[in-house]
Length: 110
Image 1 (cartoon, rainbow, N blue to C red):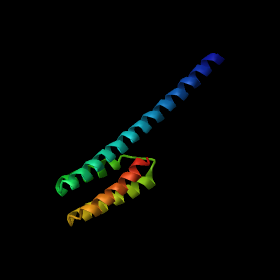
Image 2 (spheres, helix red, strand yellow):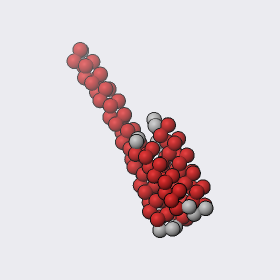
Image 3 (cartoon, helix red, strand yellow):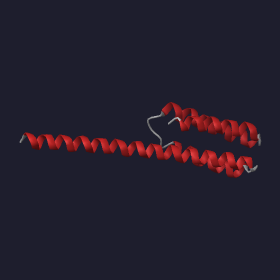
Image 4 (cartoon, rainbow, N blue to C red):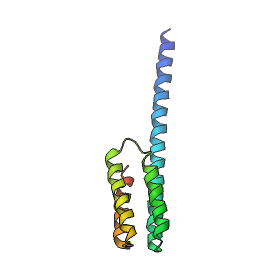
């Protein structure tokens, strides 16, 4: 009977651990997706294509909404992405790139 209880507890503990690992991997994947979109946005701005950059910034914001557990970094990162989108409307490449690089720093810290 005692061995059965030990096995049940061990199985339960392993299931909880695997569930937590899956959540962490999903968050890492979303952060990686955000980073990829931000890097693409920077590349598009370098080509003077603010419309394509905006598309990547929008996708980065959408993916960012799915990251949980890192509220402060996500909040700061989102603020920088929004600032970059606003700056992009005036086609100020250096400022837009600087703001996106700032956002990248927040998401890479996750």
